Amino acid sequence: DVAVLDPPRTGAGREVIDQLAAAGVPRVIHVGCEAAAFARDVGLYRGHGYRVEQLRVFDAFPLTHHVECIAVLAR
Image (cartoon, rainbow, N blue to C red):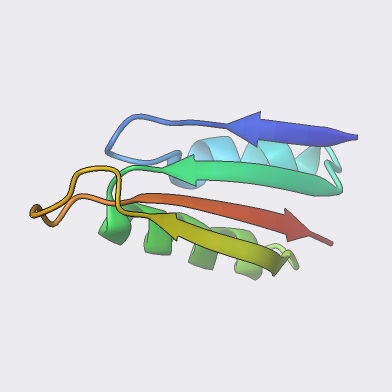
């Protein structure tokens, strides 16, 4: 089983990540378009025992500070 999340710039947040963890989802693919929110969300996953298996960052908007981040997390 895997959950795929592509939340808004504000990120998934604690409530969504808590629900995924409580549901026992073993793998998550998380897409983030705002680096700070993405980092916060990854920290929330780690608090539930998930580890980052893969991480990719894409410079989809050259000459700006915007990047797209994709993480595969598992527990």
